[in-house]
Image (tube, helix red, strand yellow):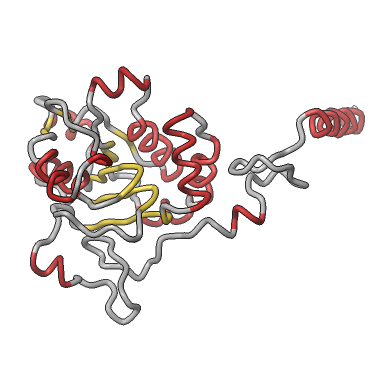
Length: 252
């Protein structure tokens, strides 16, 4: 009977491939194997370098890493560590925009699954992941809390816990993408605070380190002010973003 079941499974899989051939999650071209990404798109997926300033995540020459860089010597961000997985460019940029604007999450999930070994190396099971809180009116408009979804997926890859209630957003701020560097800093200066019940939440989680989770690092203003609020817990705070833009300077 086991041989019959195996043969049936092969036939079913063959029919499925015939009716629904595997396609690249990024450009949707047909694939010979269901591995998620075609060779052309794979060439345009760039991992964020590991030779960076450990404090702010800025790329450094190999001999200068892990820093601190000149900017962090003068004006370091609130977080103790900043890490990004990919460069916000090419197929990664398309995947994030497709997820945020159209709800197509498959390519982003593939990027996280591909980065799973690194996530497991970076994040301890006793760490607590905190998504950057989104403004309530924006969540109502989109029906999504993208940073919370991202934090939940990262937690699934590394075995840590996610807590969306600890950090809160107060007030309503303009979209960061519409503002200059100085305006970004002013826009978020008082945007984040700890929840009233943050002590109880931390005791339940037994957290040793907090991670601020966001999708894109541009100037660093958002994660800096979120980390500034999180640091009031007394725990060390790190930042992890899915992607990072390469040609934008810090506004901290």
